[in-house]
Length: 336
Image 1 (cartoon, rainbow, N blue to C red):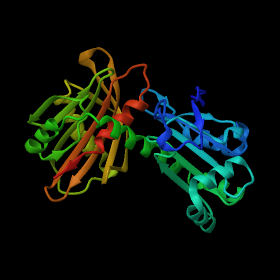
Image 2: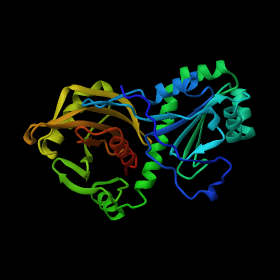
Image 3: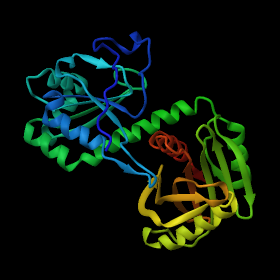
């Protein structure tokens, strides 16, 4: 299992305002600095490191979604200039961490935490543009312990969701609006297309579109068929067959492993979806293979089942950042 990694942290004084910042947050969206009561050996930091580094299965490998550094508690008066910072401690505690948490929250939110017993409070662009500051706090140790035990998945998801949104914003600084409009006019769906992606294929039989980015290869596909009901995870065989037939014909003979597949209810942006993920391989091109995930979204008005398909081929390389990028773009999908 990958453990928490240590990386160099650039720090600036916490008293600097956003207007004084000359450098954007450094590093990767996969990096988190945790500042917690008790420091690296304390209960709160240990729990958070475990939450943020719980490995994800990409079928070809498992990876921790984040690399975590725990800052020393006496660094609480400084703000790490990285993309994700998590402050965790007792709200009304006498420590520097507690003082910093109260300052970040302000009086109104601090009082709401006291009344509600605990809080997971994200602050976007705080204190610097492009930075997430996530505050995890409770009025006492028992409440904080309960919060971390009962809402751990939500804590990790808050950072991941924010990371995708900030990444998407950066990707779409340069976008291909002409391609996006051409896709809308011809096929009837909207997708915001970063300029680093290109159209590599589109077809009426079977209907679908493929966008591609190199180095390493990743594919974002959209395809569809008539369907008269909302899909469910229990229809794995039907959904598997739908994708298997499409990719065999459109992805140059790709095959899917029926023994390496998962299916669960989820979301794609604002849409409820069924998410299927698994392992693909292609025997026509040596022993190539990799990870895919497909979001099935039903359009009641047009009686269409849309499949938004994400695929990576990166043998021996990290998958998390590639999949995060594909998800960030895929979440701009809209049917008309």
